[in-house]
Image 1 (spheres, rainbow, N blue to C red):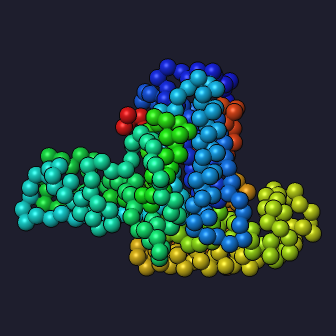
Image 2: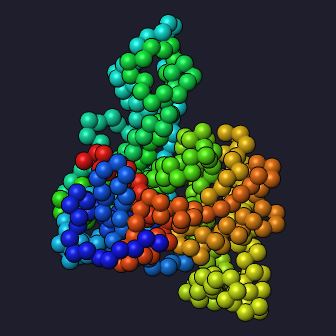
Image 3: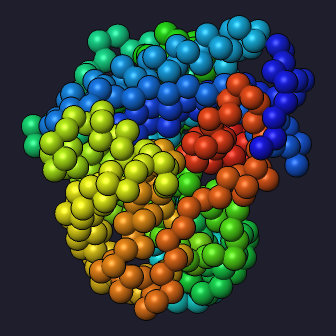
Length: 429
């Protein structure tokens, strides 16, 4: 790992940014320095995290309150760290994982009887159509890249609003609109405007979240780091963008992200994020079922699951293995159903399967689930199934890490978010 001594002042030309990874069981944050220049790397300087209180039963409103409380603690800690270094945070990048966002890819088609010049107005009309089909209203000022502002009386409705749960407002805000692919007459191009073609195809990824959740976060960040520009994103787009860049030989892959309460699948084919699919079974679900089987408390169960291979005695290892059998079967059943749905829509699934959880121990545990007998390999390429993890060495090629932020390099999501921020925030200043 690349470390350097902590500096009291940010280097000239570097921008202090707060990164927030918002999951269903924790909020993790990092203070990062983004550098200018073609070959500049992000530098992680401080890392903090706050877990939600473990509950036996999940309730959307309680989960929303836990998220905002954890976010405020993390934001306060990062603002304090920046102040101690004589820095002012200029951007706050929010990365939402399930269940805080809904993402969808629209494939838009335009066809003319004869070849015509492709103009910006043609592309804009297609994109506005996608906004309407996605359930949001086109606006000249979409709710992103804006300074945090006070929002008196922000509605404290749960983020289940973004999922349209009964009894909750369904008003949502678009947080991302990303063009994944453009093709003219069936051929990909990076610069379609001004070219002549008969057909135009655009693959457009959009994501949205509860407007009330964004307003509440705006007000929170206005208190803790006033003036910071708030930029929301979905974990699906951030992770797949970084993975495509780190591993360009893999145009087709599946990302399996296991959070505390959810498992989310992200399908990428020919470099395009085609679909996200989630089901309500995560690391905390596993802990609850395992604690019940072992007749113990969740804290002890978490400790047992975190034991590295060979650290537990033979009796404990056997006991854990037996107790894990049923939870593993249930998770694999849910995963198999999700993969079957994706296969029906998109055809045979890729063999390259990236596994990611909220901590290193859980990542390895769910990767082992996939490698066991009676696994879901039948859905993943007839024997080409390769469940793997994101190697820390690959991340080190795109960012550096100070000693005060060492845990961030083991927090794959935060590391990827720093790489993503380096490539996007500076270009939109």
